[in-house]
Image (cartoon, rainbow, N blue to C red; front, top):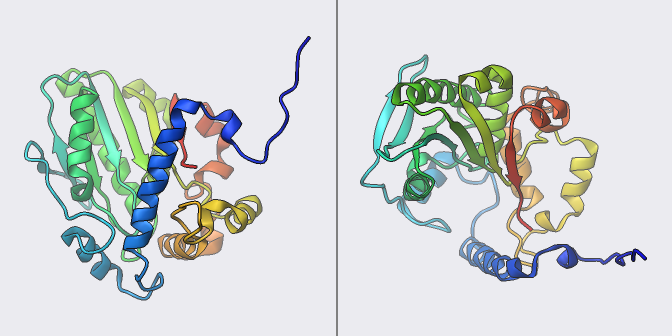
Length: 279
């Protein structure tokens, strides 16, 4: 006779016990980042370029930039041109397009250069990481358009190299831009040219903040600033980033920007997609 598992107030019963150590490790890393930024000024108090410079120099919660010696800058000719960090791999069996996170305002391929380099080697990929334009100087869709240019270039370059598989990956706001770019270019057409899947890590897709997303944001552990459970992101941090990326609330609800709630069928039927969040 079938038995029913009782409901619990936590998610622990649904998580593989082998992953609990990973969860604890991530919470510890989160706590270190929180402690490192405990004295930071509130969001919006410091000009973005000043924060970007501090991040590049390793002042604050992020390590200083260390470039992968095997990678190099490349420029994709477009209007405007798009800079990418190129990670060659003579043993590649696929091509990876990486889109960095940073709340649409911060981050660069240089800051994750060694990480993308290791990923390219471990996954047997040729890889590029896109230096897309950042808000507020360049609000949406500027960054998304740069990612579109990079994806199309990667498809052509993969074909030239004899690689028949292209993957687009991104984290956080980079996951949003990656998905938005794929939907704008047309998943069916991209699949015909060799795009085989997406890898989207802790993406923020409901940029328009539908009522359910707004209610969740204000009540979820994820947005309890400096909570005892080691969470990282607060509503006070996320909402300004979203606002400078898409200054108009009405505009942020448009399907081209808020890709998840407005076009769920386009996403779910587009192609294989690995998407995960943090707890």
